Image (cartoon, rainbow, N blue to C red; front, side, top):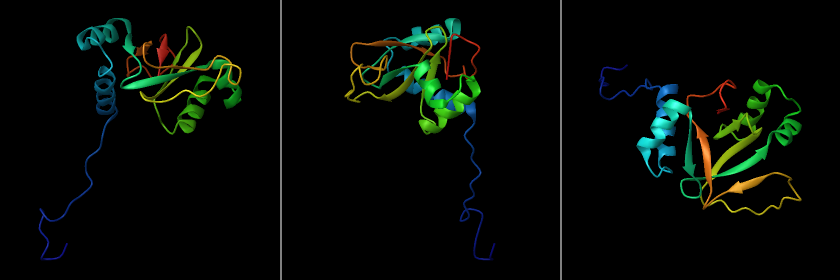
Length: 147
C-alpha cells in the first residue's frame, strides 16, 4: 500500500456466502410461491416437503428418472447429481425418490412446446399446478426428495 492509500480506500474481497446463507435465500425465494408461508415452514420442518404453487415464481419441468439416467449413462445417485449440476449449470433440480421423478425449476413464465410423443413422461407444471418441494437443506438421497 502506498502512503496515499488508506484502509477506507482499499477494498478487499473478504465476504463469503455460506451454504446456510444460500439455503436461507432459496427458502425465502420459494416461499414466494406459498399461499401461507408459515404453513410451508412448518411442513418443511416436520415433513421435509411442502406443497407450493407453480406458474408464478417458478414452473417445474418433470423428468422421469429413467430418462435422466439414460442421459447421464449411470444410475449412481452421486454421478447423476453431478451430471444434473453440470447440465443445468447449478440450477434448481430435485428428485422425488418415491416417484422416481426429477423436477427442474424454471421461470414461471416458461412456455412448454414439446409433446409427450417427443419426450415420454416429460411435462411442465405451470399455472394451476402444485408441487411437493423438499426443504432446501435436503441435499442427500436419504429423504423422500432431495436437491
